[in-house]
Figure 1 (cartoon, rainbow, N blue to C red):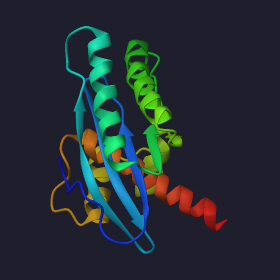
Figure 2: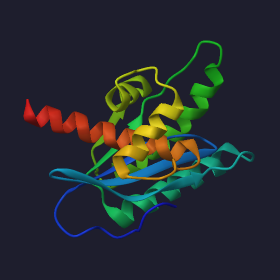
Figure 3: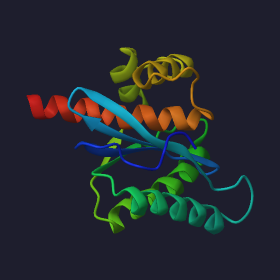
Figure 4: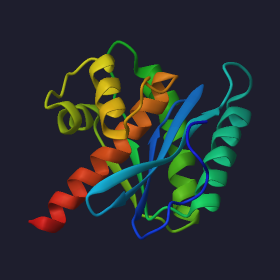
Length: 174
């Protein structure tokens, strides 16, 4: 886990970004103040690589629900489901993880926002097809980190949270 589980002083909007996965679900909690963004906490919830599907999604649900209950974010941003025609099974499995994450946010009545990975990459790097390394560098720059968060799922979750902040801020300004 990266960051401290306390809120910095001052007002701001708490945003929880989630990179859903059946084995590893990355999450990143940020607080957006006027003029700056702080990293509050980031980590992973492990569904496990093996075992019955119902046990795996139950672990994901419990872990995300715990983060939501502890921090009460104003918004949850999650990566949209993407499927390549050659691997439809991956999309189906990812859908199970996304479903329990949506349920966790819904039970707490927290607004849920969905972003395509290409949209997240474009917002952070200017390139919708940027490699993971470029996204990680953008995360390091935004939060002043000397190293990219590991595993990649954590950096992706932080990128999703940042994308939501930047797009919602621009929507308000319009």
